[in-house]
Image 1 (spheres, rainbow, N blue to C red):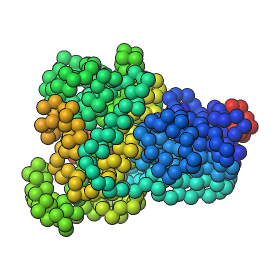
Image 2: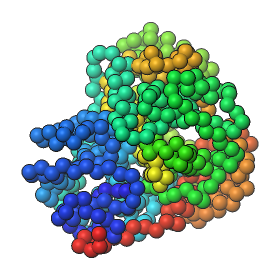
Image 3: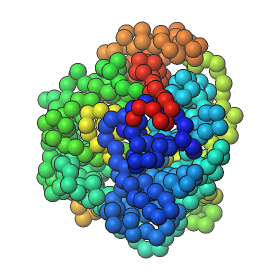
Image 4: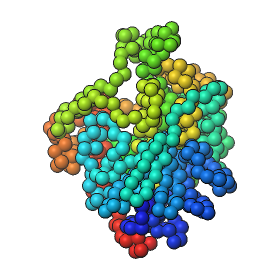
Length: 542
């Protein structure tokens, strides 16, 4: 279900329904899981869209709309104010609730669905964006559709008449006190508000991120551990079992039928390729199990934990100026862990020229310029971390859309605005080093962790299953790629099939680009398969 509106009463989706009687320039459309709370005020209408931990009285008690409203409470949500002909949107920090705009004949339309808006332009795909995506370039303000733009995160955006004005209202604010305690407090609130009145489940893979959520929700949620049928020991599963001694746990076996690259013809259309695309068989099975067996209506994942909690190597260079001894210590640790020369730890983190995959046509390397800055910060480390978590939050939205088709309300607490705000209140010198395994998160929940997880210094890896899935489906994938991307002249099929063979044989250097191309082709097929929304005059059917 999507929410949207326009700068004046004009067109709306045929399936749209008015949120408030008599107000035709804001509506909800489609079916599925959504939350829109309406707060009528004397001079304006306030909408809270998404999952917000505030009770109605807290929102209604505001005398005005403060600029921190999108991170004032736990959850992932945006806030919309309708005042006369003016619409103001406060976007979330983590980009987990993206908002899009487009213009038709002088009227500005906005919505939480880019594809919905693309119906106003025939659903035309932005091929420049597709090439950037396949090349690995960062794109922030363009959507996957022509003439449909994204609003940036952490902004106050005012739409009036024919203009859109945007101003950043969030930036990292360094705070004193115990950084681990601050992170713990916000994660506790993020889990607690979602456990209220819902049958709650959470991933429990054995990794630190999902284990933390399961432990914080102990007593109110079930940890779900997906494992290969007949295999219940080794690797992450041993850590998951240790956590399972402290929380309610459900073991769910998966078979070869759920290998990556299965059931790709069933992947539903979303605003952009979902992270789960190539593992759709696994993801769909998990959602079905959650809904039909465990009767879960709300599920937590650890997505975003890596992006939020792992410090990039650029921290070493920043430390060198004011903390040279610490910088040398972190450089030595990084060099040892990565088995790389010590000098590499101090190498410049400036944006490198991106080399396109050999199969991509045309071959257009990037200009080496950094992507636009989402927030004002002079720290390259801070900037890289914010870029990572906002990119994760935005792309994970596609998985949320897919889960909603199974009637599962999917949540990623590490992408919550308050969690991000809390973590980025930590000064750069106080962040864990780039070779540390999420030390600040460990410190925040050290009293909850079993000994094995407290001592863990590595991360699990699902890459072997991807290689196995590629080998099993290589022939079908090679045929599938003679599709939209090839017809558009973006893929040299012969070169791609060569790289697919390399990846199937276990070449890690080819895996990412091959998977990106496959997921993009699957998305194109879903987009052309599923009909676009029909738009009508706002006085039409509702």
